[in-house]
Length: 211
Image (cartoon, rainbow, N blue to C red; front, top):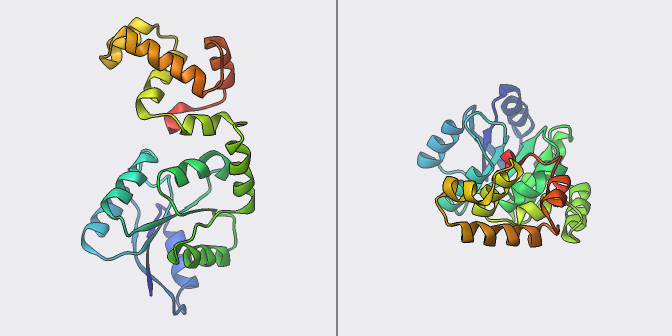
């Protein structure tokens, strides 16, 4: 029996999944959490195989928390179940440890299929997300390029886009001017731009706070 915990702020999601899985011989809904703290507390004391997680769960402030949970509970699988765009958040979710991504406008039978596939060690994504990922692998999407950056590189990038000079960035991050220059050159190369103007233009529609 696959033990599933539902982490979603909306009770209707838990009730709906509970009803759908009521007669299942394979899946058991073992708990619910309306806040991130509820999820953390449950995982600390109860056995769970898979978490159906809404990224907009209160307290789940950034997708990096998913990696933290994966590191703490290595046996645990996560299925992102959300109203958020899979093209915007899908790749990021998989990068940080999710085993699947499904939008809430999908039929509930797809949710069951996703849980069953993930429980056997598979990854569940839609054909649309698979095509989007294939496009990103060819380097055509700046979001995928950002996903390849380190946390420090993203910090430098944020400051650059806010108009900070190298010396100001060095002071803010407590690193040397030379180190900032190194990061700046590395960012230009990884993001495939030649100068700061191209960088700003390429990322003008990207919200770096989500990374």
